[in-house]
Structures are given as structure tokens and as C-alpha cells.
Length: 96
Image (cartoon, rainbow, N blue to C red; front, side):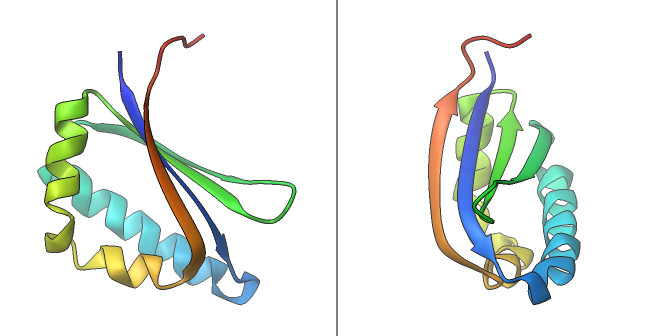
């Protein structure tokens, strides 16, 4: 089964457009070197926060990408527009 890394954070309304552009650039860069990233889903919740779930083919591919995180210049630029961020990893056990 696939694995996911889910982030939860806030983004100021004034920064949202720039955040989305930076996030898109980050995803493209990650995929260039780590094709195990199958898709990423950003959801705005009722309370105004966001969940950002990145789906990976395997835990090994996720781990390799996380280890390479310092090489992605887009990562700190993107996350600088967020606040109160948390992250959790998990394994998909059922999907329909």
C-alpha cells in the first residue's frame, strides 16, 4: 500500500496565491528527482487551516525524498508562507 505525509498549517489570505505558486514549483522539483510522489492534495478546512497530503508509492521513496529535503530550495521558500505547521506520516490501508 502507498504511504502519505500529511501537513497541517495556516496560510494568510494575502499570501495564498504566492503560496500556491511556490507549492506547485516545489512539487515539480520533488517529482523530478523522486518519481514515487504520485499526487498531492491541498484541502482548505472549515476553520481556515489547510491539510496538504502527499501520496507516495512506498515508505522508502518517502524517506529518500525527506532525506533530500535540504536540497530543495523551494521548500523553505514555500513553508515560510505558513504558520503553526505539523506533519505526520501514515500508511494507506483502504482506498475506494
